[in-house]
Image 1 (cartoon, rainbow, N blue to C red):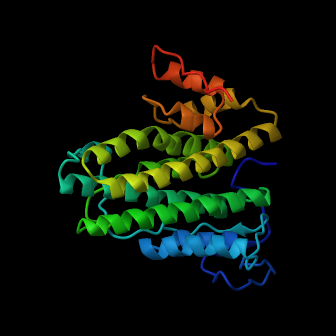
Image 2: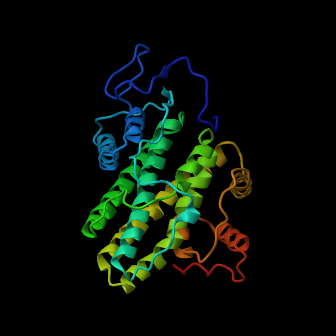
Length: 306
């Protein structure tokens, strides 16, 4: 198996063919991978979220099929996104106190932006990487649908603060790593779900605590939903990373270190949510390596006994 999105094929489906049609080669363009690409190209956030959930529901209902051998030509301008928010360097984004409604609105907007990008990341994995087992595509469509649900929850809560997605500037760090790993599914599994999304497992508890302290229990409850689901998303990333390593006889620990260095993955800093990371499929050697890389003195706390 080739761990790459680039492969030779005599039949490449143009990306502007409607997802419910077929081209002259006989390929079923109604494949969920074509539908995922169509959803990825959608610029309207609410329509994108609805499309992501609809494609996953169609798979569960058996109304759409998946063709892993389908080759789709990459269209320009991915991902589809609205004119706002303005994308700026992360260093330009100032932290605000959550004791004020405006500060909490800024935080909710930042979280909504993360979830919007997470929809795109999951959809991109579905259409881009061919020749994977069927479960790979179902898993990432599930992730896309759940990220869409998170985005909808945060958007609704943001509206209660009198704001909408796009009202505040944001950064493009998540999609940047997606671009860097666009031709290597192994690197994508290593560095997006297992690195960038796993950071959310660490960040969620302190953010939730600050929201609770500010009296925003409704927003804190949304964080509970997101953390629960994100554990499953990172677990999916771990599963497919290890599957890909096993398929070509690579050691997952050494391979992750190599890919993190090759693609300039961000250095992770504590504190870490070791319990959530264990639930998400990280083994004890990985947790110990995480502590060492972060320069922490203490070893990871032992896993609770059964």
